[in-house]
Length: 433
Image 1: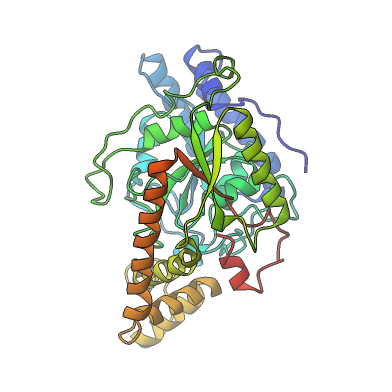
Image 2: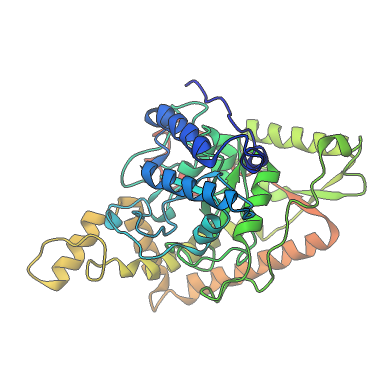
């Protein structure tokens, strides 16, 4: 497909235009909405677009800027993954179970974007309840990769990654439970940042696995992602798991290219995680990692290999923990309080029909696996042991990071694959995120 011309290549350029009155927030928003509409039929990044609301927000930003108010994201068009609550704006988590649900409040990350002057243009498509790695498990539609619409954009935040790659917005929010920001960012060629757990409040995020879920940004550049993280990070009294550390200017340490010198990484020690580069990794991915290592070495970094033996058990442990927590979290979708309710004459039948009609096959599969892992006879054998493996992985990574400044690994074992290529093989899908 023909790609959009980047009207404002970075968030910084857009902010400068608004601050200097070279362009109003309304004009910028109108331009992005036109571009969004022109490519949306080909990529299907959005579950819903709020054109009227976006223009109202932009007009309010123009008023605030004219009044002299400093807004760190003034007029910046932003897309929101549809598992983050938006006040009076449909939030479905990509599921028919929540079709038509209008939250009475904003998620903390969304509220902070609004306060900073960002303009929310719509809600992006996703694998249902975050369960998938290709954006083919949405209850509404698949999303296509803007670089090649016969391929997947990754998941579960595929809509957000696609929207940024197709220049339908400048930045977007996604969520990451086991790679759902990092993998689609890799597939779509944009920057995706999964913050440390708790750095960004989860309040208002539709839960998948509560001890793993993180909210983070997609952007065209590292500097743009850092600027968004500075806005959305920080403690939140509504989320007891949020970090008490205040936010900071995460872009402050980034230097312009012309100030870096020939060896900007001199003295830095990096290491490739050995267990992430062997069997099962596509040759193209291995080559891309090798090229990245060579480039880092040319910039002065010392790059070694480090072995983290517990990584082999990390993926199965992740899935046991994730599906177990999902089984607990998704039990609330029973048709009683909110969401879809099936017609039935008896309560038990209503529960069953509601979940059958509202939840997709992948969600049902993971709920069943999680319920099994949490059952009385298997809790110690599966969930408890997975938590022990999780601790081992944390300890090994912590020890490695005492020796190295950063650890390197592929974002996914394969490049973006063709739509439908893996939908009949759930185990192959699970290895990809």
